[in-house]
Image 1 (cartoon, rainbow, N blue to C red):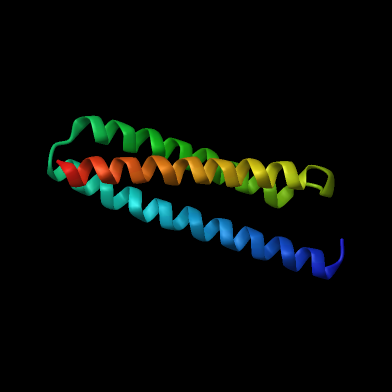
Image 2: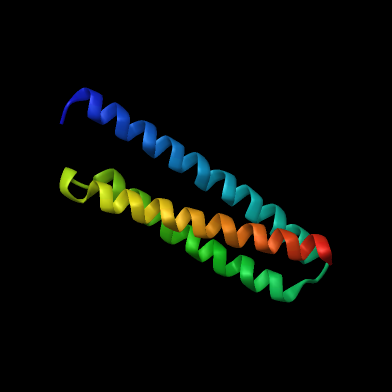
Amino acid sequence: MSTETNMAKKAIHDKIESQINTVQAKLETLKAKAQATKANAELKLIADLLTKKQAIDQKLSDLKKSTDTTYQQTKSDVESRIAELEQSLKSIEAKLKAA
């Protein structure tokens, strides 16, 4: 692999890690809010999202180790999982704001 390709992949990995870290921080904030308001349904949803986040962490690890032949598919999988997680997060945020 060329240095240019490696740098491009590193930039993608860094961007994805940043998105994951942002989601993690929001999940922790929402978890604290849900605990404070005793929003049990939302706490369960947040726990489920934390589990999904762990699966994304594993997929990111797979992405970093993937070969050129599997890289794009793995990258697309990781990006779609992050998008789903972010959408679910927004849904929970809206529920907690309405409560």
